[in-house]
Image (cartoon, rainbow, N blue to C red; front, top):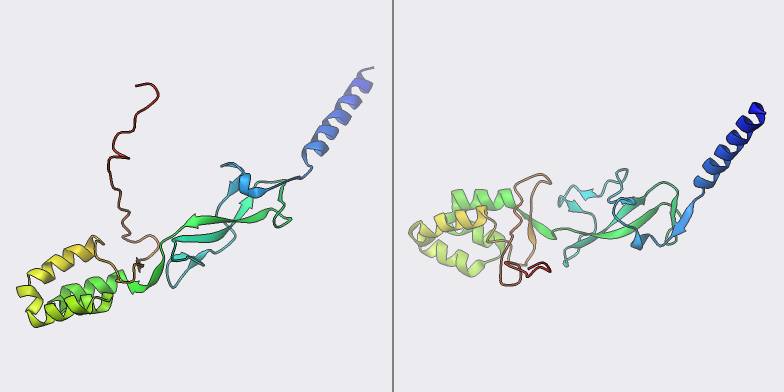
Length: 182
């Protein structure tokens, strides 16, 4: 009798394990956090030239490959990988380190502004010796705090774990939002 109960228990356990191992097919764009890893750890998604994800667009988004959890199959690709948009900083090749070095050593001649694509201000700095060195000092501060960037609207190329600054602003919409329990 005990042998039959033990045998039935083993068969029931095997049925549960086999049923749990079936793949689940779904639209992976609707997966919740924790059901996928984005970006896929096996995928090298950082472009070494720009230090941003491959395919970063001027809209500051890039499609990166993500990996769904075990036994989840995506309908888009018919495997466990799918693509999702990820925020990035579009760069056009202007180096933060180069801009800083030009500002410190040649800023009185406007080299930093010429490099960043501001030829009118660069010419003014060249003719006035960096606005009597006050413009050079101001530009060193503005470039170091990344308030002045390339003229085309792109971001600096900064090493991936470098001195990137994320500006957080507060205004009437973000300062105090009424809560339900007020």
